[in-house]
Image 1 (cartoon, rainbow, N blue to C red):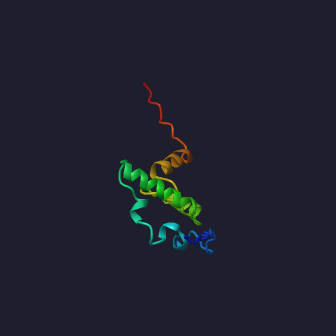
Image 2 (tube, rainbow, N blue to C red; image 1 turned 90 degrees about the vertical axis):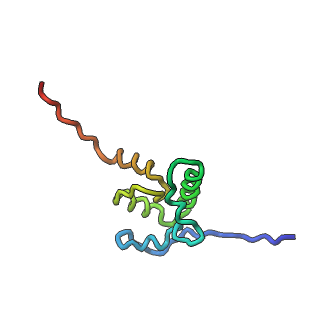
Image 3 (cartoon, rainbow, N blue to C red; image 1 turned 180 degrees about the vertical axis):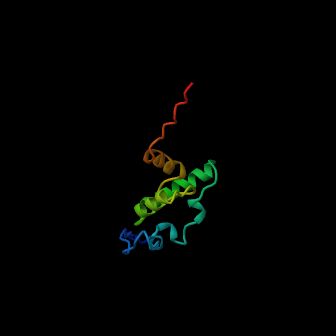
Length: 108
């Protein structure tokens, strides 16, 4: 008979600040068991989509997900998965945050 093991995951992060950058030390993606390339998929092929989806699942359990997402939006990070969102998802947020500017009408 194979013994059963109970695994618990703590979602409590040490006290970190966004401005100092220390939050990255508590990020799930900093764990060396994960391939860092997972957070930077190239293209839209099946493997890249699978990597992005896996990274997003890990991000959802990350204790600093919100800080990571806020940092990526504030710093216009345009590549990779940050805070559980892909570049395309973050671009949509930027478009909603940025008011559209009406172009001036030219007199005829």
